[in-house]
Length: 328
Image (cartoon, rainbow, N blue to C red; front, side, top):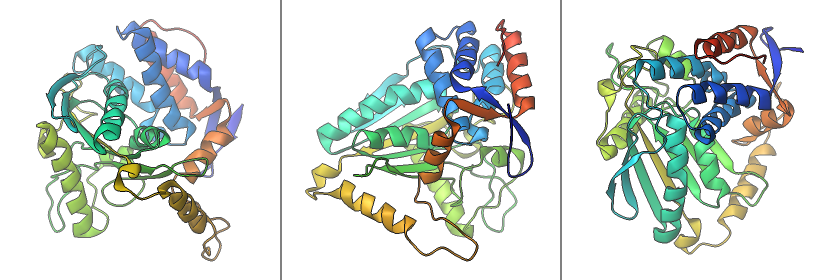
């Protein structure tokens, strides 16, 4: 089955479960335990289901290349370097980003319920896919989730020509009395995240000085509070596969109930409805609240995941490299 995107590009509808199994088997062949391999595959496929192909299985060949070169470890758990109750530093030891992130979520949520809020920073991390994927899971547990990561420099300061900080994603998710969290996913320029663009060229920060300042702040929060890499110290994800990427992550969870204000989730739901009901501009048929578009794509995808035929071919080639055969 082929689908047509608005841009006219043909996509093949691949069964989601088959895609997850194929990708998981690739990681398993590289020494990642079966359950961890399935988790990594699920995190990547989830991005493709939402239409965020730059965060999805297109990353698998680079992940594999880095694992074969030794810059990404097949181990599954980070190391706790500092634990002050509500403030924790982890060393991911260059394991797969989805694995260090999945390990972090229960801890940051548990500590937030204990202390009111908690923050975990992660150094020596790897690419973890879509920041909103992790923030949303925190919010689904009734907490406010804030997730950030830094990346290899791609943005100069206003008026400058030297890349000093990266696209540096930020996702914020709030629990709602409605069926779904209120989820905002941005890069530091104030636009929807597009890591492919960040890799391809120098980016001029959106919102000028404010955009660059936000990117720099995310860089300093992630790399600074973790004691990890920041700015030019972060490797190039698409660069030398033997050189560690060594990005830094930050996960924060906040328990609204600890602020003594009742009904925060109901206020979030009402605000989202107000956004959806707001007056559209000329030619716009529908207004979406943050998180609505990704949720709509998940619903529309059903049990199928649209992928470009060339990407399917790359995945099969990548699988064959490590001994995985089969159809997608």
